[in-house]
Length: 259
Image (tube, rainbow, N blue to C red; front, side):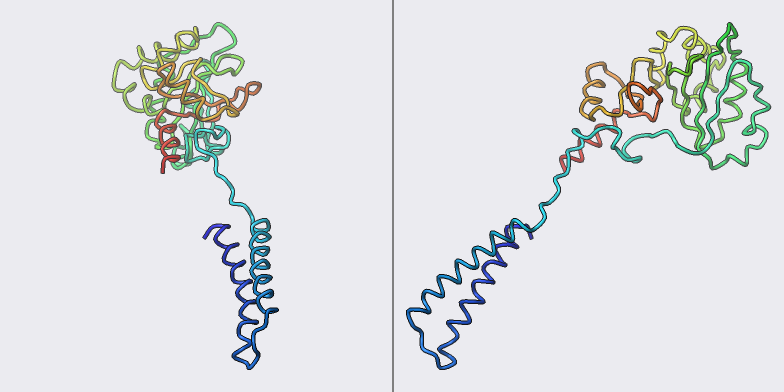
């Protein structure tokens, strides 16, 4: 029942209560007089006043924003793939020794943990050996919660994104070392080549959206640039990736407003 119906019911009820008290008088042996008519009119006016006052007192229902007008930072964990806050945040560099990673030495300790892998370019001239990365992917492929791979330069600035699902299966099933060079090593060397990551449902250095922007803005970017998704940055100043917003996530959010 809405506010108007409630206030109307209260007002009518209040008026009828007063009118009933006077019109019930004849049944108690009291005869109606012209004064009773005036009282009846006053009762109706009283009831109308209560209705108006009730409408002003009752709280107004909160209007929900349409999903398309919500800001991306306000979306819940179920609305798109937020990077996990806990679990294992693993960083590999060209000089890393894979066998020394605890996740490789004690895999059972990480069986149920979320894993986010960051592949970082060396500040010097050192370049990744594809054999090194192949060995790491082999070690991580059995972890079902290994979902995200982020590529960054020597200053920890975002270069590209690769879904870990690709590294866990197709990459290891093909010409692995050649693919690692194409999608990782060459991209770290020249970030403008990161557009090739779109071939494997990844995201390039230019495929991003800020948390303060609207869902509709993300939808427009995807449509205009024919993108599969966007990396989400916390803000313009703090370009720390916080998750991945894919096209199907936006479609689901827009469909909610039509329900």
